[in-house]
Image (cartoon, rainbow, N blue to C red):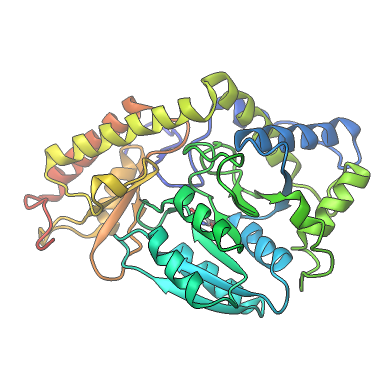
Amino acid sequence: MSLFSRDPILLTPGPLTTSLPTKAAMLRDWGSWDASFNAVTAGVRRKLLAIVHGEETHVCVPMQGSGTFSVEAAVNTLVPRDGHVLVLINGAYGTRLAKLTRMMGRRLSTFETPEDVPTTPQDVDRLLAADPSITHVGLIHCETSTGILNPLPEIAAVVARHGRSLIVDAMSSFAALPIDARSVPFDALIAASGKCVEGPPGMGFVFVRRAVLEQCAGRSTSLALDLHDQWTYMEKTTQWRFTPPTHIVVALDAALDQLGAEGGQPARLARYAKNCETLVGGMAELGFRVFLEPGIQAPIIVTFHAPADPNYEFKPFYDCVRDKGFVLYPGKLTQVETFRVGCIGAIGPDEMRHAVNAVRDTLAQMGIRQVSPAVV
Ligand SMILES: *Cc1c(COP(=O)(O)O)cnc(C)c1O
């Protein structure tokens, strides 16, 4: 344990490490009627929409709460009560999307591939051709439970060709991976403040096709999670419908300005790619094996096989690495023992190198010699 109290570096996919200017933006109180605060909200919505180039076609509707609140709001606002949603699953967030769709009372079908296998556009084409009653398709862009990337542009094209509506959970990819509403057709795309835009957690947002949202009055079965109502109220009054997460909004605004100064989404992707490369390379030198094939690995979060050594156990490993200043993330797989390391946040390759060193020292301290997994 260090003698000095410092915040550890969060290698977790939200909450994540934020910059000092982003934290400093939260040192002020704002009233929800204050015109200057509502101007910040408008600016945040505009800056977010520009990241997906959606100015001509979509609107950005912010929503209080963690990312899941916005996913649930999107399904509940867009899908008619007699709609039929096909959810494409290859991990825990796909499973969650299916579960909330069912709980919202919508008809649900699922298509599941193993956690290391992306959904293909051919799968979607076949499923939509076979069932004309499907009205909406739900897709997780980067499935954070492993870090696997699903082919959004190709699947979006297939869904559009079949004349169905696409709802994308782009929570952990937005602002890092390229998403262009001018060439990738979607009706709703969801992300949140505390992921790759590097703000604090507490607010989500949904990019909804304006012509679609205009048709969505009265569809929601929830008062709080009604995106149509949130949107129309905000357009009319400039205010949030219910208490806004003021500090999160101003910090997100600061984080978005830093994203712009860094060079926008392409620069962020380049930094995360370097983080990922540094991490995977360093961990490979220690003997760790990654769970996914490189071609389907998004540079957002990396799943590593746990060491086979009998001295390995996640909790003491986690505690020991944390004492050295780095917070890891448990695995989320049922079949194999893994742990995860995030590449996102206000961190660079230096932090990743230091994290690998902390893991190296931890292996020595715990007497872990067999680092590679028992069976792959
Ligand atoms: C983080 C995340 C969510 C939202 O999770 P919350 O815990 O509600 O913030 C949803 N989908 C994906 C893919 C995510 O990474």
